[in-house]
View 1 (cartoon, rainbow, N blue to C red):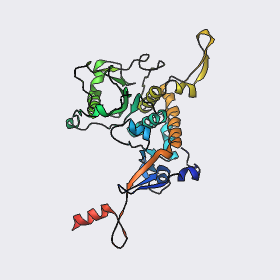
View 2 (view 1 turned 90 degrees about the vertical axis):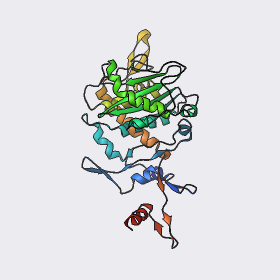
View 3 (view 1 turned 180 degrees about the vertical axis):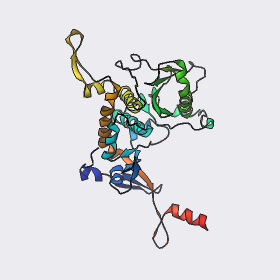
Length: 315
């Protein structure tokens, strides 16, 4: 996304009101053009948290629209630094936009958050029924101790949770730290580990089996888990596109040419960052910040609900 996008693009569908629920929808570009900033590492940036409004995506979710984290162009420049850690919001935004861009019927991405207490894990028997029958796989990201991994829940008949973790040596005990997050996702969607069907299992990814084209992920430092997660999500939703877009041509067996991109995780950072910015710029028309309308009193003056509540508490 460029700061100098045309005003026509910025102002498209800027304001739209929903009279029934008392909210106003603001196109994300109109919000980013405002004056409110957040300070990140001592520098103020314009950041917005819009909803992704898409009829197709909404049909493949059971918890409504999901929120993105979108910022002005200058914000992303610092993330090309090889020692800069990417937060989960950034990776989830990449996943949600990649899911939106591909509109696959068999695979969805969800930003389910992180379970905070044991009470969060409660099976919902109705959840699985509301998932469209075409969905065979749920992709999400999990965060623990500043480390991000991708999790893919392969539904029946696979009944398998696959963990894509570049830091792991594929030891069984490495899976334990992600079990609770997997249970949380399953509970949200009414999936049961034990039942009349196949037993649900959890395993590490297999480079050849779980990707359309073999992909090995190895994290060599504590900063690259975010770009690695984005690379995995990209390959799951659009197999081979990363190579087609950033690869160089090689001649394979039988003289057949093909494109192969860098296999180094440190190189994926700039490529995934560029892809994220391109997707944000491409899909801004589908991003809206939902705000509650201000009430008006009898003299037609605007009343801020939060101010009203504060005054009542003071009384």
